[in-house]
Structure formats: structure tokens, C-alpha cells
Image 1: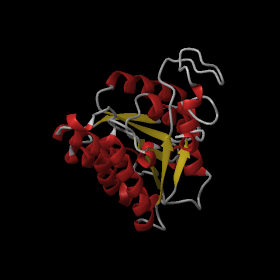
Image 2: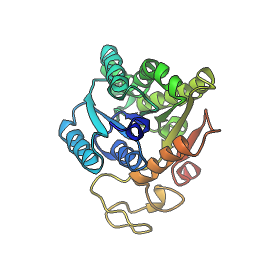
Image 3: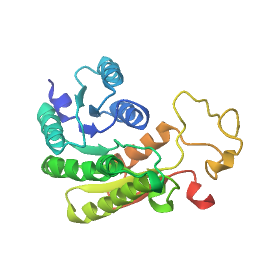
Image 4: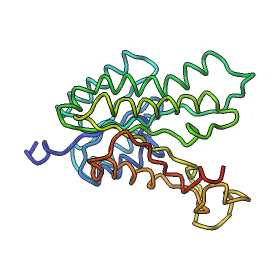
Length: 253
């Protein structure tokens, strides 16, 4: 490996086989990052994306499987991620369980899944990666949700978990400073996969497009990916912030 290749920064992105995580991986890769794709069940998608990125730049991407509800698996994911290229510059906690559960149907397993993936896993993975991130003066970016501040009917556990993740982002920004910056991105409505969503057109998306945002259309994964890149590469004096990438959706609740 050339010295130039060795100098390329490394990003670990959880839940990066598809959708937002995959969009972040592609953009960071195009911006010169080596990528560690994490997945749980989406092995086929992860391997396909990994092959795609490696075809564009040889030996620039690997994929690792881990169950983020397992603390030992989190530790091993961090160990393998750091060991592969001997460095880690960015941790993006994107993996998330997301499903509705009304109050009268909440079960202990829902608490474990939703709080575990959205709050506990980012905390323990940040802990496991901290030494490497400190060495590289790196950063952590947590993907939250505007529901963390607005709430959402029948998603109380999910919204609570994302609120915990936002608090973790602010708290770690204070605790890990000045070596490691920590920020979060709170998306609004994200365009579902395989759905065409031209701006200002209703199509099959909704009868009330304004419900998406003040901008009258939903976000795309690229909108979130570009916000991530901004916080990594152009925001060296920003830490402890929650960036709402929601087209103003919070304003119309």
C-alpha cells in the first residue's frame, strides 16, 4: 500500500448496507475515505456495495457483521475496524431499529431492541473506538431523528431512544473535547427506497406533500450524506450540535 493510501482517513459506518448508511458510505468514499461497512442481516447488500466501492478504488472498503445488541460483538467490531488499516478517523452511528409500538403493546423485547440499537450501542461503540479517534483527532456523528424532540405517536420507545442519543451526543462532545468532536444529524421524512419523489409533485407519495416539510418534498439519502460530510470536513469548530436536516418539518408540527 502506498503512503498516499495509508494517509487516507477511515470511517466506520454502522448499518451501512442500504439507504442512509449506504448513501453516506458512497459520498465519503468519493471524498477520499476508506470505508468500513457494518451490517447485521443485509449481507448481500453489504457485499455488493463493498465490491462497488473497491472497484472504484482498490482495497478501500471492507464489510463487517455484528449484532449491536451484543456488547462483546460491539467490542470486536471496534477491534477489527481499527486493526484493519491501523487507524479510525470517523465513527458514524447510523444503525437503528425502527418500528411502531403503541403503549398498551410495549414489551420488554421492544425496550431492548429500540433502546439497545439506538442508544446503548452508540454509547458502547463510541467507548470502544475512543482511543483510536482521539489519536486521529477524529469525530463521531450520530444519526438521530426529529422525533427525538417532537415525539411521535406509537413510536414512544423509538423517540425516547433517539432523545437519549441526542443527549449522548451533547454529553460526549463535552467529555471528549478537545480531541474528538461529536455531533448529531436529525433527519425528517426520508424518501422510501424505490420511490420517485420529484420536487413539488404529489405522485404516489402523499395527498398532502406539505406534511413532508416546509420545502414541500421529502429528503433523499444524499441530503443526509452531504450533511455528514459537512460536519466531518468543513465544520472543525462545530461540536455538540444537533443538525436538523428536515426541510423545516419541525416548524409545521
